Image (cartoon, rainbow, N blue to C red; front, top):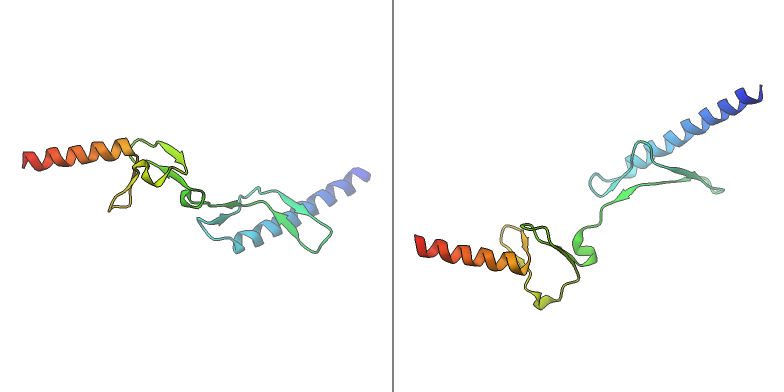
Length: 111
């Protein structure tokens, strides 16, 4: 009998947790704040619960530069380090920027 009561309580807790997950998903913003189907739900003494979620943090928010060509990544490179933002929204590390510049010059010479 005790085991059946425990199973009923566990099932009810699971249903309640699922209701919190569903509400959290409605509150989320696709690509910015997302909730997994099996997200952890932490019940507290206050009326409500915490639901684990993923929040998107763009590289710019923490000062990370990532080269779109070679995938080199640096945290807070100095402004004079030679990173280049191109007109098509790519970011190039100093080496790839130099290579692109050389390729551009070669292309100008060949035409």
